[in-house]
Image 1 (tube, rainbow, N blue to C red):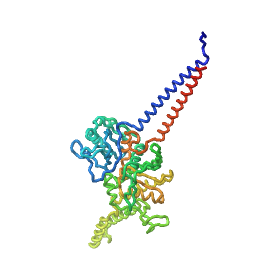
Image 2: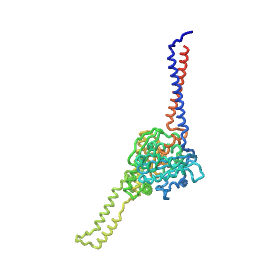
Image 3: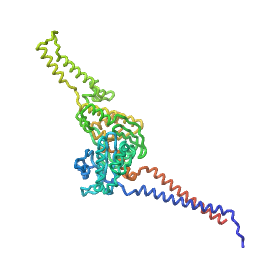
Image 4: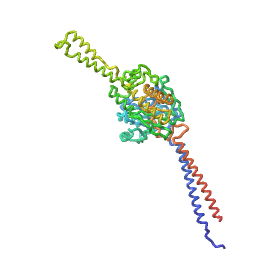
Length: 500
């Protein structure tokens, strides 16, 4: 019988076996991690919006969920239905959240409702707007949505969640949370703007359009390849974002002269008390009564440098001279209407008194050659031209041809869009294109609404961060293969050691 002898390679064999077991465990964990990632990406949670067949409802089609806009006391909503709903005919699942974008001047609200008063399937996205100063009215409206969640969306009132973005998401966070008694999730403003715009560009037919005087609304079909582009978001102020991808963007510029500027100055200069009144007044005005035009200086076009006679040379350039003319006439009338006379004896003749009276009456009736509507239009052009030129310069710096204009400043207003579009084409010699949207004021609110969903639920044939995801999967696969090879090598080594 051969006595037992400690084999010199046995410790190495045991270590190799332990390494093999550890490698096998790592491979199993990698398998589980890969499967988990795959499930989270391709089989997301139960809440998923189906955008197949989505379309914008015609303006004359009433919203089935209009009853939701009535207040509990029977009065109408404190705001108006801002824009057309978006029908989602193939979505039937419960949606238990609403979204708000709270800016310095306006609050934009988006919520989903089922077609409860119709035999049609699916539901729709609804859009509301409030002035930020009336935040209490907005909160009351959200309370009503919360209390009617079961009818609107099939969920219980306590299941409501508010997705909030914009500066007011922080300023009014406690107010909203305490009043509604629900979760309030705050989302980054710039990311929400991009998510919302990407959704409209790629998914909603007859949403994006170009503008010209000959073709005021030329719709652009949804497309997959959209980057890079500039987003010029015109709210109270203006931010300009260069977007290279769903998560690749930077703020490249902006200006403090935005919608808040127009609103504030027109509040001082006119009797208008809200933004819609100001835009309405601008639509009836003639800026030529206020602005100094190229034609006022040259008497015609300045064709050598491409300037039409109607081009604005100086915003409000006629106001000073016009006001001086009226003031001088009033002073002249005041002098003639006084007690003085031309014969030095303190007593004017009947003829002199009659002449003075007629001149005084004439001077008192002298009026400025412009009115509030003209002022509104002039200032609208001044702000819009400034924004358009800054957008053009940024597009030149960053070599971008597609410029999307968003924000509640535009409101589908013809003069505003024409100014931005014409200016961009003029300065770029037709090389750059301005795009507008029918829901231009709701980019942030829609983006916040989508943030509640699994990533990129609304994008066809694409995923947000797809490159990073695929790279991670390739890395996991490579690690798995490396571990498998390590297991095989270790097993072979162990077998050989045992044989020795």
